[in-house]
Image 1: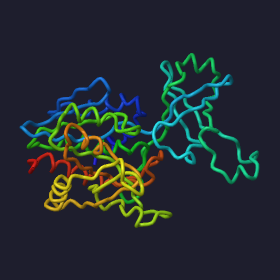
Image 2 (image 1 turned 45 degrees about the vertical axis):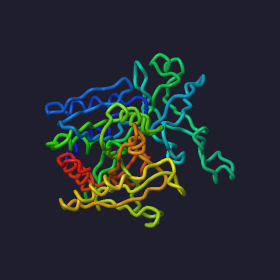
Image 3 (image 1 turned 90 degrees about the vertical axis):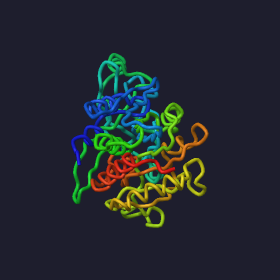
Image 4 (image 1 turned 30 degrees about the vertical axis):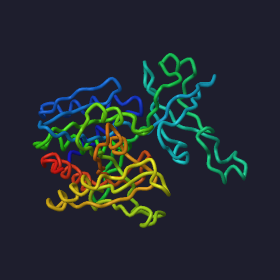
Length: 348
């Protein structure tokens, strides 16, 4: 496994709407690999390899959850809005980086100290609208740095290795998917035309995948993303049976809790093909029905007159936090499965 590449992808800053730094890392990594890259006006990065009369689109999103400046008060404290799904309880005391046009500034998310809270306040969740960012700077200084309403804000976290081949870092959703797609492109000798799309603005509505699928017009689509690993306390196996180290998941269906609406029901032919490739090549995998989220595959399958689609996901503990834990073995398995798919003819 190329830990240094995963580190660069994870630690590069690129919240929804400001993903250009991640695209630059990907383009640099794909140089000399027989891959043709281009970008559209929206920021999606396309990487093509192979040829033929059949096209496979493989998508991994580049954006990470983060914040955006909403207001700066007269003392220089910053109020913010959230970009993507972030639980309020993980925000206090987080260290952030505010991406001013002239200067990047570090800050910390503050809120009222527990010592001065009333008894009833201590029992309640502090919501994000009662938080602020403290940079130490005045309003005039911040404005001089090019920080204003709309400036993106990211979280400061480095990649660390844990025991038993585990890795923790920010934005593994979906930089781990970007990693898998990059490595598969480098290794594969495709039997079809492969159009890998590193999409933007997935976290706010699958926007990049929607327009890129309409542009590519593929015969099949595969999204690569992360999913919830439930092998830790306070989460039952029946609610989240996926485990770290047991291989990537092939998603059967996903969507909203209680109904699976708004998500994807994987095309049975694509799903069956991926399962067959995994079993034939000794690649360990898991099957999953995910309630409570979806991926770029949901947008791809609804494009044009309908595109047979599926999703391969990398198990992750603490998804949509800033310390997401994944397994090197699962990531390697995802790469291997993608390579086999790219090197196989589409059988339908």
